[in-house]
Image (cartoon, rainbow, N blue to C red; front, side, top):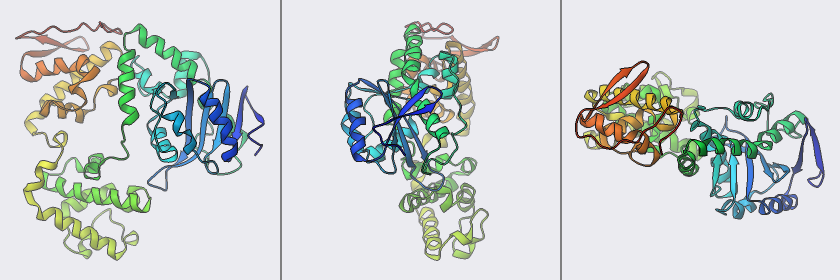
Length: 409
């Protein structure tokens, strides 16, 4: 690789500087310190490990693009720049990038603008960077190197060009989306959501809640769910300890099958569908059998530990579905990505306990008050064309007007 002191022409008009080593990193720190915003992206692998392995960090500060070799360059010196609340770091789909940077730098950026989240507030659901660049700026970028090997050295010119393009236009894209958000009076909503997302740690979910991600566990009875929660927590902790993907330790199917079969011996456990004996050392099998026995011994006393969103009574399901249809219709009516507002589980949680994301902030302003009226019987829902419309029947409260594509704030 060329020295970081030499700008490399990567083709397609991009120019970037390859950074490899602690001394060359000084140039990056100087550039970032001199600006109030920087665009950031990462290239990483996580197929064979629990924690993602960072291969390349891309930063655009001012007009300079830096491609930082994370295999040879300490990234902890970026911590002071990340902690400055006056400096904004622009990402696209930042969640995994932030997780990786926290492990590599030591902290997450204090102030983040996520173009994917922002675009959701103007009706573009989970849009890729390429789609947003084409939509807002008329720029086409190639993604042919996306699935290439980023741990290999040297990186190819195609990989370097791809990596540079991921940060080259983020500032201009951010500005265009921010203008639309301001016009729609949703800029503060987007900032609120980005602040929450910046500090959310999905992959660091508490082990006791890891089972919630397993689709095969949803149809289990309450006792089996309790066992599944313990087995999944054990799997999560073991995967972290040895830094391998959780499904390498035990498949999702095996977690659910163990919870149903309740094996009491090594032989019974190894005979369960989804359990692969060749991957299970004797001490690991014995440990897992003990986990099952312990979860059963607690009996019903642990039942209250199950999250309300997964243990809602069958009688509440029709109401949850009704509220979900209203949330989806309201989102489409005002031009916001419905997945930004709430998942089905979050709606169930709100219906059951009036808690969760829908209980405050912009979500409550948009749909929370309406959900309150529907759940309490103060309003009904009716179908009008293709929309679900709230109709207040008693004790009316003032309701903000949200027009199609524009809020009434």
